[in-house]
Image (cartoon, rainbow, N blue to C red; front, side):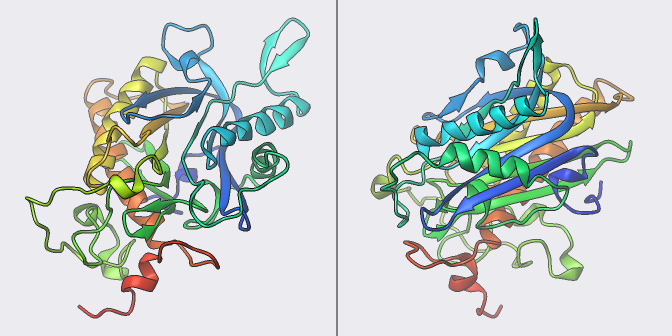
Length: 336
């Protein structure tokens, strides 16, 4: 396996990602879209999810494909970002055909970023506009860190962010991850700069994807003390592939990808996080070996997600009014 050309989820051909943010509010939205509907599924492991249209992603439901997926800040307010995407797609003639009407299918998930120092005293919910703007910005290239749904994200002791990574399997299938990292847990080890995802970092000869700091020291008996951040959490992600998957196979891919979240965030999947992963499959390439290649896809998804999580935090940038420092502000000047 090797990273794709961009090392982004958009290495999966046909996919585009758009970000929109409001730095005054310290929040934003991110949209994954394709020119054609794609198969999608979801798996939730956190105890406090916030979602829209996820029931229809079960394999026994009528609609098997979606038009877009949305990740947003804003807690319950942020669910409205998908409404903006839905309106814009309908205006473009996209959506599930019902008589003479088209209904775009746009599942979404949100994270909590309401206590991050931004001004939340809006007169009108901003998320519908952010969703529409993010769709309008959709491109194969997009920025990581404090953009889109990662704009106001935080993790234990640091700013969070938007991350992405990709892998191309030996059989030619591509897997990519997109994640807004807003975890109760820590992505770095102890008090140091080293990422829990370090064993999966690539490009070490060129300085690495997130600093090439290697493994640090950690106390295996450390007990998390999350009380101060209760309810201010949730890491939401999308795993995409160009493999031809059924909705049931896509759900298995999302399930396997949660291993990547557990590798990169300690602790993850807590009762106070809404940790959730969507899977998206464009169907361009049949699985040469449906059994073993499905296993390889799951492994690649977990590896991509672990790297994407670290990249999101590593790429975060500082802004006025932040309540937490960035990784760069905390560690970039340290020497090995």
